[in-house]
Length: 144
Image (tube, rainbow, N blue to C red; front, side, top):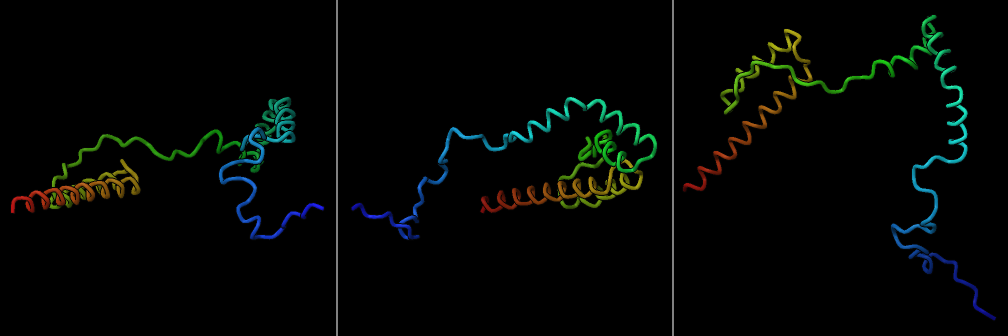
């Protein structure tokens, strides 16, 4: 009589498949929609124009839920905008940072840039001066 397979953790510790290998490599790809999702998408596509017309009608009548559906799609959030042309003084050393900061704060005060953009500009200027001081320090160190 053949010996029964061992069903204990020690025997099965390695698992049946190697890491990164599927038991069914020809199976459904990750992220592909299942049959129910595809069927629902097909039904929705058949009536999409009617549904959209109804949502627009409801939104025009002041239905807040319909407005919540439409507004983010009509006016998507702008995450980043190009920086407008600013007349900022050059930053060559730490001594230039106060004048640069004053110019950036003036741009915020005038509404030319957002405070978050001002913070990013100041961070960039500080990084530049830190990098330049490191380069200067290394050049001076090599002259000894």
